[in-house]
Image 1 (cartoon, one colour):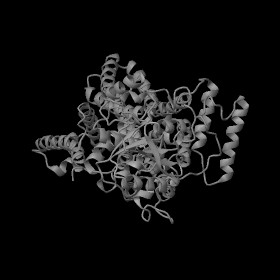
Image 2: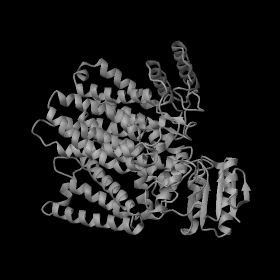
Image 3: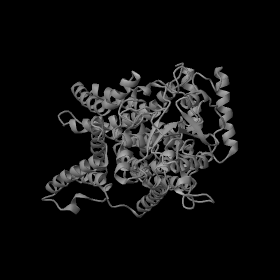
Image 4: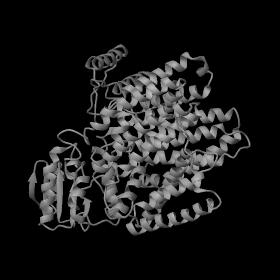
Length: 637
């Protein structure tokens, strides 16, 4: 019931912002930006007073809904309600494509509803940090053995937190990504329109986004790559609108939208800085030649809005780590893995670019996959480099043959990559298309984002997940270039829709069919899809703790935390409090920040714990009382 409050607010914002000279899709993007900024503001303000609770969150959304309802009624006082929402007429073929696309999106939504969050990152920090925030009634930093819960960008999890507080569970957590998939489809269709695509081309752009294998797999999870893709789509769309403003036209509405979307993207994932930068350069260069005054006014508004959205997040990180973005590496100081390359040369760019492209080229044909692998090795041999150069490769990982994958951490987008290559070839070979500078500049901006990504960041086997925003942003370009013929656009859209079917059905961790699927497997078991070996130890350990009637639980682990929250709080056992113990990193300074004393807990769950750390805990009057596999329970004497 109460979860309807933020959703009602979003709907009302859409109605209020809808104007006769704008299509409904434009209003949806504008409303999403205002709604998200309100949510971030609520979260940060309530956290200052440790009031991130059901009563305050529900109350504020209720007030917002009432205010927006009043404004909406005033705005529509002399306007027929139906007249505000105009649906464009479509041809039978376009209607069929839209229906097919709707079925894919709806099926992914069904998976998001039935299956719980279960990705590795979600179990380690996405959902775990949400659980800690709700318990602490604040998003302030807290003591934890998993520092990623603190310093990584929290934008997507802010939304999940509100959904979880108002719904009382994680049933809606996956829908943040699902809504982002829908929003991205709307956004890219508008960008395609700005790039010169007609109605069929705009539909093709939306189809291209909703058929991305990586996007389909992620849209039913609590990762954040689709969320940042949506905000970047909004950013690019409003930036193109701002760029097209003529001298004398008001620029502040678009500038506010660009600043809000950029700020939200930055708050959601660090890759936003990389992918947004080339578009900002494009805007700056085009504005300098037309109006320097417009450039400076817009730049000031955009910078102020974007930095304001991220200010509290920056401040928390600076206070604890001495940097607004947190530590520069993952892991313990001196032994962690740097996110950026150690060397920045032309060969670094070529090596990482080739390996990143290869990740997207996994096909059902082994001969093609072997050819791709050999080509990458041959290229590195010619440059005199190791294909697994530790200076540019994530520690402990190796480049291998790209295979067809159904897993959201590794799935590539080979069909869409082929469409990108085809569209670039068509652009370069077509004189009418080459005469449209906007198309060329747009493609250069997206390409520059990829090259900058490869130049700065280490290669990782799961980089395909991080490439999702790039494929989303390529979609309107593909549509604008390849939709000059409606027949070609329709055939391509049908091909993409058909190719998407396997990823809709065969999601490796949330499958629709097979002997093990989301309908015949318990929700608890689905949490452990990626770590099935932990299911029985976690279940038995938490049953043992519950039998001891412990209400304060300590955690001694470095990953896969969230299922413990679910198991310990089954049957609405909300009296249980959970805190990390044995914390020896920067966050140990937060042990006296208002949470419970880390050593007043009556039971400690240890998972794959280092012997010296466990010995230190036992020295504080804790004895091993239960053990199975890597999981051990220690009880206070």
